[in-house]
Image (cartoon, rainbow, N blue to C red; front, side):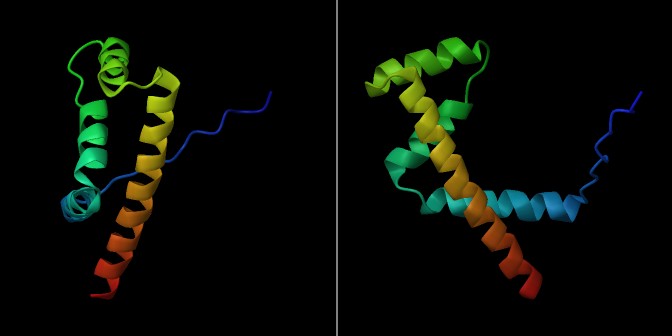
Length: 92
């Protein structure tokens, strides 16, 4: 029997978490207001996530899958921006 690999526990220092959060805030501000509002609203559910996202899709006039795709694309942009921001902080 082959043992299941266990991913290493990643410990982030407070400074590292603060840098990531700062970069995320900075990158979020670089989005258009419409895109920023969409991604914030997409993740600001308090309770039933599925119901909240269905309601958001209706509000935006989108199919639920189209909303998911948009959120995925925005996340990709934010991820890339945060990575670049963190790299620039290493140099500074």
